[in-house]
Image (cartoon, rainbow, N blue to C red; front, top):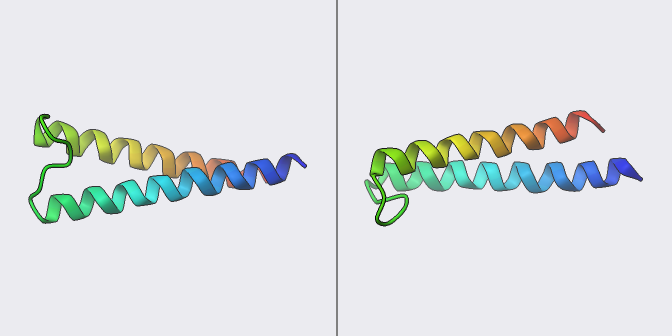
Length: 65
């Protein structure tokens, strides 16, 4: 039963992390701000960091299955 929870959590984290990385990349390529009212470099770096973190967390959840 716990493996079902791990699969669900892993899928949610991996999807969110991948979507955040794709969205950040698309905004960066278009030279559009990633977050309004924030330094472009800081917002891009922070969004990339959290995207990678959530993707890694999703993979970690899948490895526990």
